[in-house]
Every structure is written in structure tokens, then in C-alpha cells.
Image (cartoon, rainbow, N blue to C red; front, side, top):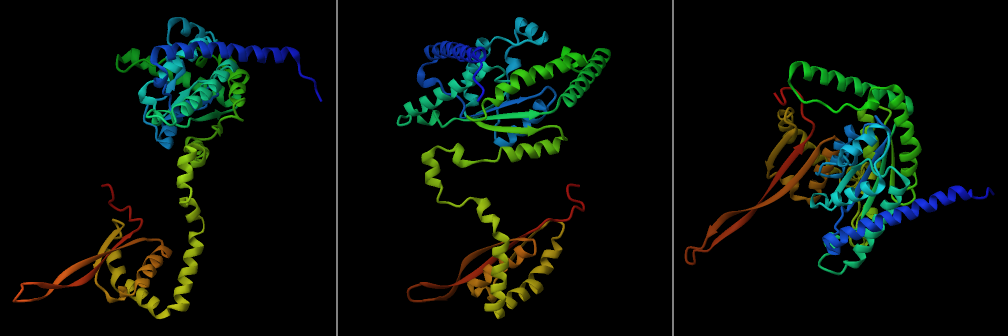
Length: 399
């Protein structure tokens, strides 16, 4: 067994202590300014990291759509836009952890981010990682503290996602230089024509050496920092080497909703008796085949009547609606007097690739009148409203 390296252990201890000092100082300041019951942070945080050129900006709108977030992402580099911070960033360095943590926590307290927020560019250092852990602990502490109070809805179970979009060094450098050329060409055209707005030119996008250095800084600092959170938060490693559609499919797969992880334990326990859609769908085809075979062998006559009704009376109407993909039909056919016929009707259409819905309406029809009392006796007529949906023709659609 390899003995621990004392120097490295000391560095880690120092980083943890620094993080505690920084976080406690910032937290105490915020608590004094806002009040403890107003320290309402987002329920869900998606911490989006990635190598330079990995596509964080390109894929952020898609991630927002997948998670149902409507607020713009918090781009940490944009929050730190002071002249001094810009000089540090242009030189390839990083703004101090205390400044980053305080500015970020203040931003997260804005009501717009109550349901969730995407953080682009945090955490980037080991100290920021430790501060993130402390924030998660404090949020859970506040949740327990206010759980049985009127403030409880504002202190929900926090869910942190760590999402890393990854490309290799060669791809990263190529994308950075390509972006630099596109920005330079755009700005040259704006200056020439006087039309449009200038885009920000990054020094690292203009030099292959600088782009390579930026990638290596990410690998050595930011990537290692994010990796250290694997055992604590939901960690999503997204291969971003491919095309946009491929990357987005990877994102969908990684961010699929998991109620057992995201709902409050009490809420989940109340809902768990209801089946999940995916569980029902999993064996739906096999169950459909079983039912259709059962109809054939145990209710042969009724099954044939339903098939004949569909073939002679329904399909001619469906064919006339081939372009729209929707046919709506009212019928009083006596075949539906047997309730099993409705189930057969829906199953037959499902097997053939349609989506059928049957709605039964009861209509009262005057049948007789008592002339002495004026009382009207009605009979009930059943009207079956059938709706058949399918993929319509593309011809002239959208024209």
C-alpha cells in the first residue's frame, strides 16, 4: 500500500480550510443582509463545465429545454466583468475564489432562479468545489429547519447536476481557432459596413499556442475539480466530439428525469404506488398481441363483426382524411352494444399503427308525453364518437 504524500495532504487540508473561511465569510454577510428565511437558492443547479470549444454556449438552450428552465444561464465569466478581472482572464489566469463565490451566491438568490439555474463556468478550482459542497449542506440544513413552517415551499430538496461536455485537445484547439476566425471575419465586416454589432474577440482564439494552453488549464484544474464531485452529485459526462444532434441525444439520455432522486422523500412515497409510463410501455406490444389472439380464439364472432365494421364503415372515411391524419366519426352501430367491442376496436387500430379513441355520449330522446301530467318520458341513445389519428401525408401540409 502506497503511503500518503504529506505535502499533497497538506495542500488539500489548506484548500478545505480556505474554502470554509471564504464560504463562511460570504454566507454570514448574506445572512446579515437578507435574513436567514430569505436565503432561497434554486432547487436545481446544473453546473455546466467543458473544455474550450466543447459547445457549452451552443448546447445550453437545449439543456434548458430538456429541464424546463426558462431563465437565462448564469455565465460566471460574464458576472466577473470588471476591468481587473478581464485583465486576469486575458492573461489566462482566474479571478479570486472569494470574489467568484460571493458574486455567484448573490446572483442565485434572485427570485428568477427559484426553480433552477444553469451555471456555466463554476466550479473551476478545488476551493470552489469545497464551497459548492458547503452550499449544498447549508441548503439541506435550511430545508430541515423550515420543513414544518410556512416557509417550507421555498426550501425544497436541492438537486445538483455536474455536466461535463468533453472534447479532446485536438478538437478543442481546432474549434477555438475556427471560432476566432469567424469572430474576426464578422467584426471586419461590421467595421467595413457599419452594420451590426461587434463580437467579443478572445485572445486565446487567435493563437494555437494560447488555445492549447487554455485546454490544458481546463484539464489540470477545472476537469479535476469537477471529477471530485462524482461521488456527491449527479455526474453527467457528455461526449461532445460528434455533431450537434449526436451530442443532444447524449444530453437527453443523461438528463432523463428520475423522480426518486429529485422529489422530496415524502412526495415520492405518496406517488410511488402509481406505475411509471415506461414500465407500462415496456411490455405493451406483447400484451396487445395476447389480447388480439384471445379475441380470435374466445370471441371469434364478435371479433369478426368489429373487423367488418372497421373495414366497411370506418376505413373509407379514414382514407378520405389521409392528408390531415385525423378522422372523427359518430356512430350508433349496434356492434358496440357489447362493451368488449370497444376494447377490440381500439386494439385493432393500435396493431395497425393508428391511435384510436372512443368517447361514449348518452343522448336523451323524447319518447312519449303524459297528457295529464305533462311528464315527458325519454329513451337514452348512445352515440359513439370515434377519433382515429395517424401520421398524415406531407403533401401540401404547411403550404
